[in-house]
Length: 319
Ligand SMILES: Cc1cc2nc3c(=O)[nH]c(=O)nc-3n(C[C@H](O)[C@H](O)[C@H](O)COP(=O)(O)O)c2cc1C
Image 1 (cartoon, rainbow, N blue to C red):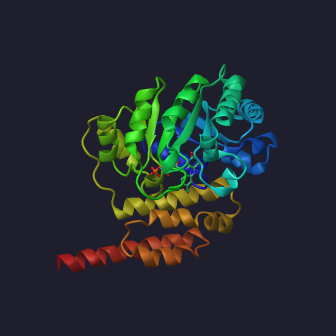
Image 2: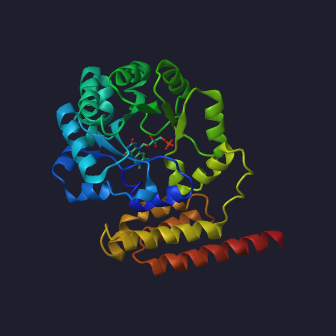
Image 3: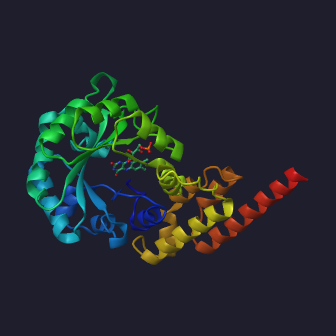
């Protein structure tokens, strides 16, 4: 996820039980120009494997070259192609979800990447269910991708027109999973371990992909792992554990140095910090303060304040 699944956050998700992760998407041109930002986006450690690097672009030959280059450069475990991004900047350059409207170009991109690298690593793809409600074509797209040699397909159950609103349509995801032989990973609105079990039991998917829920609660991976292994439920995550993770995330990001010094790193992380606050007592006020933080010491103070207020609320209620 762009702006989210950087090196540090992927490390946290792995620790908490994520099985397979994908980098923030990068443009084929960014890789071919080897620019500094692209290097940052594609960084990962061996402990994070299996990791895929996700590429977007509309030119099969350039995408193939970029895939080869990233393999020489980083040896990822697989290459993932983005056919789902709804953002105008990407769509207007014929990348991401715009290719759902143009199956011949979509096929040429998939073929270009498969031809270039499938003797070295598997090539996977991420799609949406279609461009808009009147052109839902995920089954057709998935069959094309399978015939191009794509080894697995992740399906986000929304159209491009939906953006991130409305509900993911898991009936289309299920239809895709039944239509192709390659593994299909379902994606959209998984917010708990219960959701993971439900989608496993009610659809033909081979796995699920978790996006936004991990931004405020990366523990979802641990909970899902326990549920899938039929182990006891993980006790609910307390406020103290949440703050400990927020602070550890900040410290690791500052140490990583890819966003600059402490001030720049925390500025870059503000939207992440705000996401973590979902469900915290006094979340509204906290968010207002977090959007100005420039040091870890300030976040430490906010954590102490937030935990003492929560205690006061509890004492108040029990008294
Ligand atoms: C901030 C943000 C960035 C995202 N970046 C990417 C991306 O780079 N590549 C991708 O395939 N999907 C990206 N997505 C989409 C998610 O992977 C996922 O498909 C979508 O959020 C639906 O799943 P969810 O309901 O579990 O969040 C992004 C989503 C968000 C909210």
